[in-house]
Structures are given as structure tokens and as C-alpha cells.
Length: 137
Image (cartoon, rainbow, N blue to C red; front, side, top):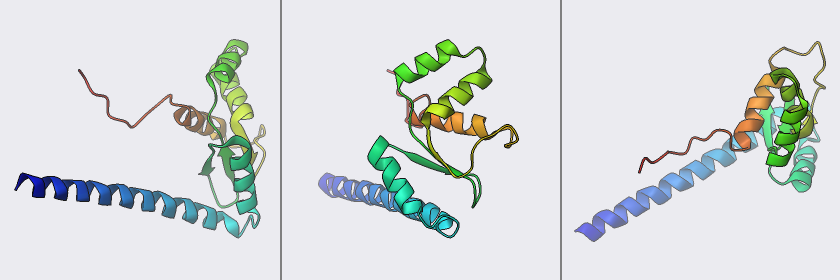
């Protein structure tokens, strides 16, 4: 009887993993499809970024404003932190390094939170934050 429970548990875990992967793939396709009307070359943009940087992410503010970014390396982060005198400068430096494609340029009259949101996303992609469970031993 124990073997039957173990088999069912393994089956449920496999199905959960498959569902999670399918969900991620659906989300990725949906995001790209959302942008395709305004940016017919979005597939080439994404493929080019993936080819050049490997691990890249997409964040969509609106149907006309999106950014593709990559994680920052420790060396890049230390260098940026050493040369910046405040958090705003650090945000700009990190975004300048890691945003590999912007549908619109980030300029002085951009919405105030654009750099901050992208900075936080880049940090998260660079292992500054994690949803993984911490196990107290």
C-alpha cells in the first residue's frame, strides 16, 4: 500500500511540474503576442537578445512600453555601486548596463518609477531576492 501512495505522490508532483512549465510557456507566448501588433519584429528582438546575452527577461509597462533586461554580474554591480553616490544614480547605472532593449528610451520626462521598477526586477533576476523556501537547520 505504501508503494501505491508513493507512486501517486510522484505522479501528482510530475503533473504539478508539467502544469507549471506549461503555465510559464503560455505566459511567455501571451506576453509576446500582446506586443506583436505594435512591434511586428518582437520575435527577432527577443531572439537577438537571447542569443547575445543568454538569460533575458521581458517586462511590459503597456502595449507600447516594454523593456528586455538581463541579470547584472557581481563585478558589474560592485563597479556601479562604487561609482554612484546615491540610490538614484545606482538605479540608472544598473539599468544602463542591463536593459538590453527598450521600446522607448528612458529620459528625464519618463514616468518617475521606471528606473526603480526595472532596477528591482534586475536585482531579483540577479539573485538579490528569491521565492525559494529557506530551511532552518
